[in-house]
Length: 258
Ligand code: MG
Ligand code: MG
Image (cartoon, rainbow, N blue to C red):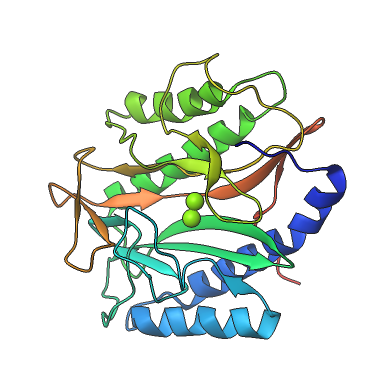
């Protein structure tokens, strides 16, 4: 079921968006050579406690994972791209790290992800990250009243295809509200003019993620972490946005440092 939020509810949701944005910015600043994934997760957990927020991941046990997740942050490194379960791994020079974080503040969820390279970057990794960010921006630009979900999907997918990449349609964006994953599904490729019409009050996560060499995934033995089937690297970029009469409002947009 698709739920629409009132303007007052969208204002309430901005607190969750700001917390998720600030947490990801703090984690990104800490992501460096020598940092352990478990330390990043523990730090995120500290920030959740300090804020009085609730993790969307800790007890999460969906059909596609071997739940409960047990951590508050997804950390996907190199050929891992989605749902990376934090483990005892110390980041090394050139690692491509995706941080995906969702939390609830005052009963509203926000969900956002970012990919970064720690240390010395390979040009192709920076290009892949840039492509996911460009695709996210294109998807957000298409998230206007009068368009349909398919227009967002098409905006994302056509950028990937222009870069010669195949798009996996199994995992994509989703409705966001009191819980993390709701309707509608927002695929990362699709036909323009199709699907649910975008209405004011629709709040969705848009989250392009691409792999350098394939659109196929395999699951780690931890039951969660999704890796490329061919060992190529992946990147992921996500924001939670609200569709309003005056255009898309990015709830998880990073704020300038105070
Ligand atoms: Mg996410
Ligand atoms: Mg999401």
